Image 1 (cartoon, protein in one colour):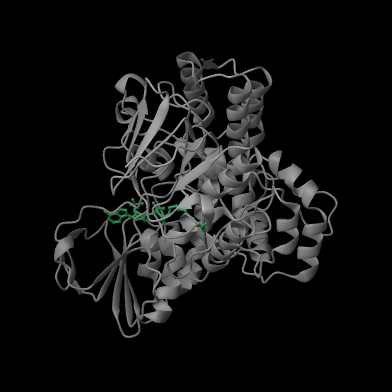
Image 2 (cartoon, rainbow, N blue to C red; image 1 turned 90 degrees about the vertical axis):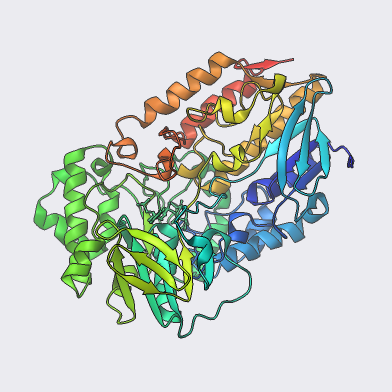
Length: 548
Ligand code: N01
């Protein structure tokens, strides 16, 4: 079957694919989106686990392309929960009539460039074939769930779930024995909710997490109004902030500065942790809460400052947990703050004071196998009715590599990326003409407010396609030397940060997936700096690209 031929094929109907439909329509292009899920929303469609929530304030984690949308949408909480964000996605789809260009329940399994026709051919799992000159991968950065290969998994007789593929139907956990593997962001959000709902919750932890309490405020009318009155200024500040957030504070003329990118929690610059006395540090924590330690700038660059912050974190958390042995297990020891994406929680540590919660330290007693009745570690058998994998994602490259992408002259993306992702500006790959990635590796992506990063990328891609069309050009792809120079630049700016410390094993580095090359994948140099490179290409007629 050879379906109709639009100008652009887009894979994915999360926020990136959705905005691309709207933007490309404005540019007069015809579009077809192929989406595996049954509706829009991407990450917010799939991650429905209890407690799922965004760690960027919702007034900031929202689109800026439509003033009407900004004004009419109401966020009930400062940091919205998943159902509200999914409502927002649905509202956008309705308002801009996006669904008419989206084919749902269509998982793409092969992507191939047809040299002679200068077309991309996409094949769905059902065998449908779609062709277009341009192909946009709006496949998300955290969209391929990582499910570790634990022996016996298929034997489990109870209900198995993954936080990243949570079912739509509500699940009754009352009286159930629930086990959860993993203690990353997803688990930290889910654990307090699961503990309230389940009969008993057993948490299987391999690596303890640094998490700080999240802001849990309801939206105040005055705050919302002031944001809405200042949205143009806020959007401008977002585009000039390294993490894509404005840090706009109602009733303050000067916003607090954020020196780092995203990571939740950071509310501005508290100076250097090394420059104040232990008593002053403690006083700050007492007054402003544990999250204040995230705001010292030297914590992310100076190992000595980092260790001070880690110690303060540990001593504060010890106080929150009744059982000293449990407390010690929950404290990270072998890596520092700033290595992984900062986690925010609501009642995470106090959950371990509940009678119906057990913590199992897998470093002491690793999992041996999953059995029909539950899970066995080296010394204990745990009977479970429900087993939840909160084991993360094959981040940033997983979704692209899974698509079996073949480029010019039969080149495979899996070969090109054998030793890590190689791309120019996280937008395009040499050898793959007219194929674009939204928030791909080598762009700020996950270190930036995603919605801001998406708007910038989609706008850039739209402008590029219009440029080619306007000049009657056939194709665009990066020059090999631009790509290599950019990869070196991405590595250079990450070197020396806590992100790439030898003790750090994060998904940013691909370290959570066995066999994945250890490369820091996002661009850490900041969103404004990154935009300079993108805009230079557009303004100067794409000198870093081969345009045919
Ligand atoms: O995944 P993770 P996540 N045996 O990779 C453990 C975004 N997000 O879904 O560290 C036992 O962080 C693993 O242990 P270890 C956010 O960007 C955002 O929680 O590998 N355990 C770890 O504890 C976030 O960073 C929000 O030793 C195993 C856990 O599973 C990203 O998604 C909310 C294991 C995985 O943690 C990913 O978060 C949620 C095994 N074989 C997510 N394999 C917000 O906006 C893995 N683990 C707030």
